[in-house]
Length: 378
Image 1: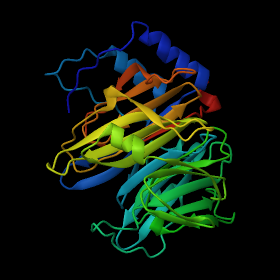
Image 2: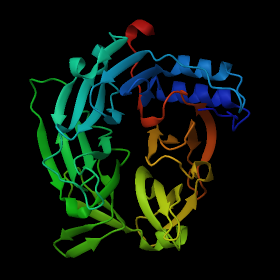
Image 3: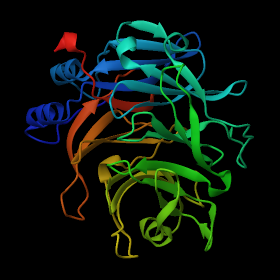
């Protein structure tokens, strides 16, 4: 993988310093698949400060391979890894794995224990939590038990929610401590065909993008739409997406891949656009505006994240950095992660502030940001 890294601002150093200091961003995490004698999986943890120093020291050309970045920690896994995420404290790392023989597990790791190792195995340092329940193959032939999306509550450090490929949503409470109980708090059936989700910034509501049907007391609700629910999955509001999807792509079919709830009325949404006349798909990202006291929904496109992927694995990874920034990258063909600034009180598209090149080996299957810094390193 090669890339040309072009700073998007003349004050890139100031942007990096501001983001790091303001939000105490210390770790970011990638899943990479390496092609050696056979495919193997590893979760790599990088110290952000050292990674950015190496990133800025690079002299990059399109015809010059990117340098290898040695991870601070490498965690191997026997089963395919499908998702990674730090909890709100930055002290627990969730790693989701799936296999046809075992199903899907969310492995919870205490980062403080993880930092004691440079190389370790996932099974040695984590508590596995089973999150699938006997799902079969989906209508399009995909394993229904695999992970489609995952999110920690931003204020409750032991609460997370999952979406499986079957479309089912499960809300779970658990910690890395095996002596503490795990609890299935609530769930939505696979008929909703949930695609992606995001917590509100204070963790008091969930935004769930669905393509199927939810049965309510007032009748069925059919997608595409955003369900806004409370932390126990009770419906609070719906945002219809039919009209805005038609405005984004009037001739093709749109499927939500990821969503980030940035304010009460704004969502960043990653989409896959499929054409009925062509096998080529396009990955697009839009800012969706849905005022709380109006039924009108509008959008603006984030052009930096438009891509025609060559890989069959289509996924966006969107994560907030505080209240004014978010970071994004794509799984298929993405060679950088981009830091965006969200305009305050405006319907303009977010502005790209910084590009950070990704490790050149393999391709990205996940992205997570952590905010823990061990006291011995301060």
